[in-house]
Image (cartoon, rainbow, N blue to C red; front, side, top):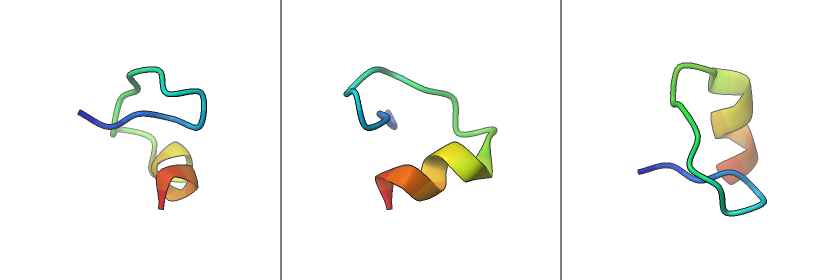
Amino acid sequence: MVTNVKGEPMNTERVEDSHFCG
């Protein structure tokens, strides 16, 4: 599962958000 900067579960559909996780 991919998590955002806040550590919350997020969808991998948004590549922009996924970029945040690196």
